[in-house]
Amino acid sequence: MIVNKDMMTSPVGKKYNFWVIGWILLMHLGALAAPFTFTWPAFFLFLFLSWVTGGIGICLCYHRLLTHASFRVPKPLEYFLTFLGVLASEGGPINWVARHRIHHAYPDTERDPHSPRQGFWWSHMFWLFKHKPILDNYELYSPYAKDLARDPVHRFLNNTHGLYQIFLGVILYLWGGFPFLVWGLFLRTVFVYHITWFVNSATHKWGYKSYAVNDDSSNLWWVALLSFGEGWHNNHHAFQRSARHGLKFWEFDQTYLTIKFLELLKLARHVHLPKLPKFSQITKAPQLESVTS
Ligand SMILES: [Zn+2]
Ligand SMILES: [Zn+2]
Image (tube, rainbow, N blue to C red; front, side, top):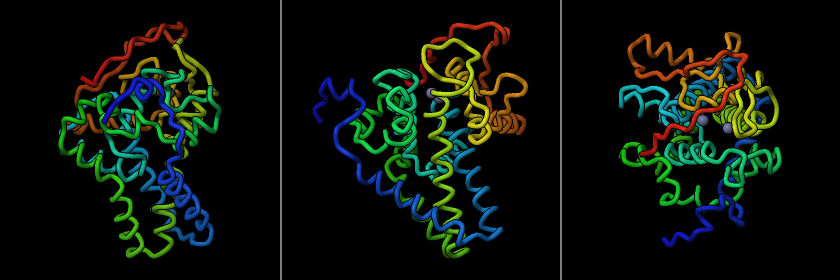
């Protein structure tokens, strides 16, 4: 395809993406059935799958492992963790990683796909509703995730990511009827969506800053608790490659504890940690370490 300059510089197109809007609407409508289908097994399934797909799949794998190379795991485990991320229905791994690297490259500028400077609801979810040439075309976004695009397994998962949630929905329905389908798929997907989206919206709007960075990223305790540690977002923008986002002793970071557990099992290696200045000291953020080439 012909790539013009405008496509590379403008992250937002004019047309709405009705597939995405329809899918997100369907998930929310399905989630409305939750009060009428409550059972305790369905509730615990919801908690378990929220952790598996959101905590492990998105926060630990898509974000800290694949996007920022904060640590390494053996390839078969990396593929399995990526599959868990695919089950969160937030897009394929190459697409997710590319758009998040674009966010870090241009945070809170007009090239940021989701900055609250363009409105809270824009950054939270409305940005997903519009076609964005750079994020919707593999040729344009894959250069931001060259390391993954070289890998046939990641390319396969990226191309087929939409199928697995549907298979999972069929399995959940056959296993536990409507309670498992509603709580294990619809409500769980909506819950994981919003905690991920709060990291893009709320933690670029509210909270405190421990480090001076050239964007609006902040540390926000309630997002950190909901999002398995991702809400310590100012720390993350300051030390993007760090596997640990909660840097003060009370900044609870569940995902980092999981990475430490994997390290204990000798499954996680090369765990990156920042060289911390004194906490009282406001520092200049280090440059983004490139992991795309
Ligand atoms: Zn990040
Ligand atoms: Zn951010």
